[in-house]
Amino acid sequence: MKRDYKLFVIDILEAIDYIDSFVKGMSFEDFLKDEKTKSAVIWQINVIGEATKNIPKSIRAKYKDLPWKDMAGIRDKISHFYFGVNYEIVWKVIKKRLLELKPKIEQILKDLESEENNAG
Image (cartoon, rainbow, N blue to C red):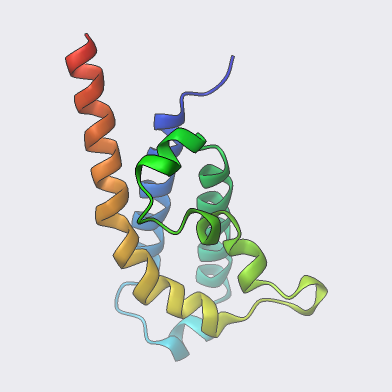
């Protein structure tokens, strides 16, 4: 059975919240020194990328202001194949891009829930 795409939207929101909680109160230097946090953040960024790939094209088209392609390819942007992770890019994503994305993703979820309520 195929998973409802609304669950992927929830996955994205949860990943953003997890990342925010992992780095709350940290400086970039603190982040660089904390292997557990870096690993957890990278995992959640991968969750965002994979969940995004499962959002239907119809939803992506409806919410054109979201950087769907960037979200789906985020893992590739932060990793340099076998050369490791660029943590400066990760930090910029955490501190800027995710904060911009969250309200937009929340709106998608509200819209989906409203559609469900109106249909039922």
